[in-house]
Length: 134
Image (cartoon, rainbow, N blue to C red; front, side, top):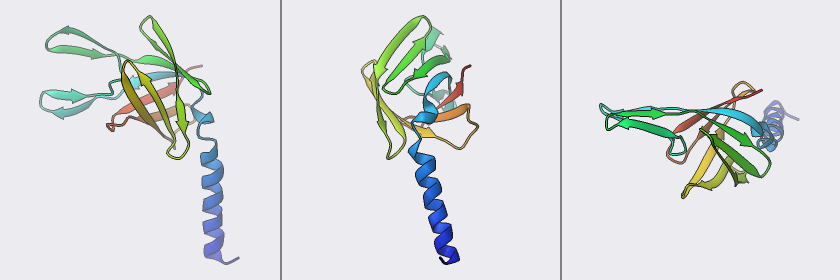
């Protein structure tokens, strides 16, 4: 095999084996933090999946929550409310797809970090940071 063909073959093998196990890397218990993006002088954006509390018209708190990801279900633990919902895994783009509180979510898994850390990007480009719980 020529050198260029060997490199291409090696890259393809890494992609096939590295990405074929994409779903298994997200199974487990996770602490989820919601990234907050400042969109203007007086506006912020964050994933609609994130729980919030509002003290008054000018004060808002975005809360972390726990997520348990199984092979076919996600359990969301927000404050004292526990909700288990089914999800679909889209292996083509490495995303979780589910409905929660009348919203449809597509969360793409961004990898390449430490094994106990994952980023999820929602359909609006907003991020959720997951750190594995022990």
